[in-house]
Length: 93
Image (cartoon, rainbow, N blue to C red; front, top):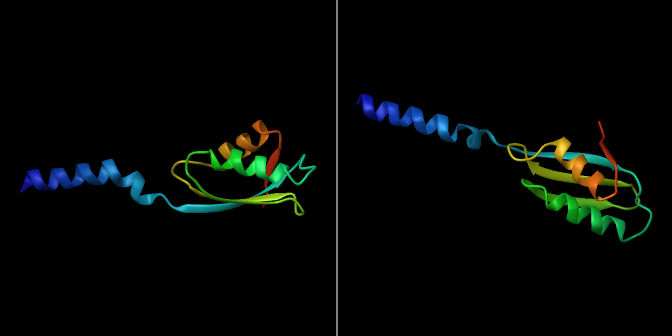
């Protein structure tokens, strides 16, 4: 019985982080979008971040709405990806 309890405890510890992962959505205010092709480039860059599930970019609003797995990605990774693609971004609060 003790072996079973230890096995269950180990499984919970091992997989506990995965069980707590949750989708999170943030809106980024984006600079340097100057043409209708810019949102395509930004969307591709954000989509390559591990854990990103959905990206919607608005040229008119100069923003990107990103849904991601918070166990794999975070706001810092998203803003870094946008910046590396030439589009400095900040999280809208």
